[in-house]
Image (cartoon, rainbow, N blue to C red; front, side, top):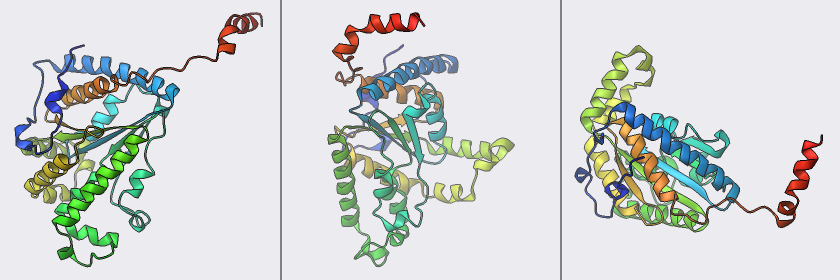
Length: 292
């Protein structure tokens, strides 16, 4: 298995998204990339078993990206070898009436993975500084004290949200949640091609919405919001990784390798030792079963 230099993809504060590429293939065929992913995801699946047995950490994986960036297929392919009870995926849509009666982080907090499990957020709490920033009128539906119209939603408002998100992630990190945040960095041209495929292939028609084209016109605004959000919230305990997403197979390999290399650093995550009394009587238990 080839080692990937994950520092290439790790975001820094003050970053410029244009400095990060959107395409990678490692000069490998699709077949080779699929083979490499298969190897890595098997090791990740084994790690999840150990994580569950250890029982002191959970893993939260946050995935953001523009429409058609490949979030769903990445989740399906990378976690294919996991015990289905060991990974829980949450796909956050427009907030419900109940969710709007709570603060914007509430629905994400209650969906956090239990210790021993992986949790995947397909779209995340960052929608609250991305979509709502491009469409600030959505904030009015949150009924926040002091916010009466769009004019009240200024830079200070967003800076406070970044502080709140950082505090939320610091809190859960200090209590045993290992955090990964991924931005699937798609080029505008590749999105155009993928949207065209949705229209041209009958089996993909259901994925298309005219709203996709309206949001596409706001591409530059979204990129600016992503850049600021990533820059202000990438932290040692909650790092952002920027994944070139124009080639889906390579994106999955990069994503899986980052998870594996980073999780390997947790040397304390090991399977627990058997109780000494049980260990001393293993032969007796084995003989008991064999004699049935």
